[in-house]
Length: 118
Image (cartoon, rainbow, N blue to C red; front, side, top):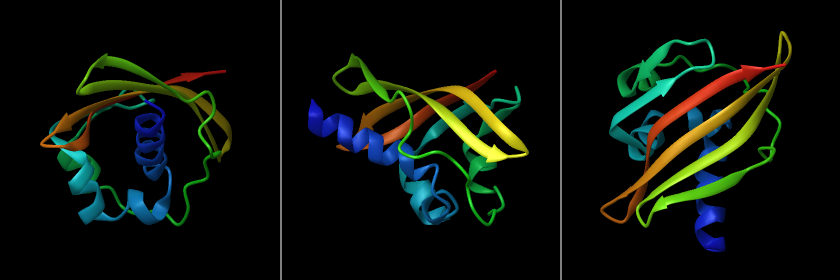
């Protein structure tokens, strides 16, 4: 299980690094075809929305991701939870949850949600 936790942490962390988050080929390879996100703003994003996101110079997030945990749902579905801390217009914190599903031997991001807290 420790290898799986390390892999999912690496995949989730890649979403917080500009060099991977804004690499369309990379994102296409890890997002499930039916991906959906409930953003911390409350907006709903599809796979197409995420793939069309414009690159920003730098993602200002605290890494490693604080309070990172993997909660098994089944052998091929895992929930990842953690806190995101970003530094843009002041400090912004959110509870995060992702659902990763193993498809044809590869982990794909199926769902993500961010909920702001103070």
